Image (cartoon, rainbow, N blue to C red):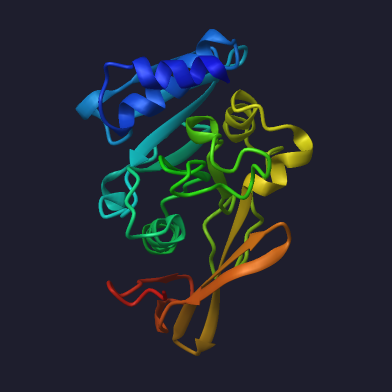
Length: 251
């Protein structure tokens, strides 16, 4: 990982996209992915990644900050085998990373239920993680020195949109997705340490009365529940579709 740190520091590209571009360039140089392209402002996603060839396996990545206000602008391409969001915090001292992760997940799960927008995984990284300002507990021997070499946290989302007929779809894993495991490989996360970086975002819907439903989100880390939230009950349309009223998602 010495090379990736050097690339980060030497990069002349500014902004979050430049940092993720450095990650993908390192993956390309190491043969972890086949190719990648930054799309610029012409698409509602920021990077196209050819993960494998023969047959082609292509992923799309949308890059966001820590607030997630523009989540609804992103769009999953029809051709994408995987659609991931990379949330890159710029290192604010005031808010802890958990605050940003909670905000992003709330918005992603709301989009999943309300607009049926599938996101397979969220990569979450704070630029201060692994420094003296914000020691990283995942690296017990380098809590204050791992810095940019710290791997992102990976939040795995449902494989399908939850419905009343399929109220709690199964969660993705490193076996059902390819890109998350490859990114952890780049950051030299060995198989025994992967669970430290993995989080499961379970999203379900349930009927609370004849014509009203509720969205439920449960986040697990290493098999333990670390957060739960529910939306306010809202009207179900025809028993199969529904609308989440803006501003009513749980916190």
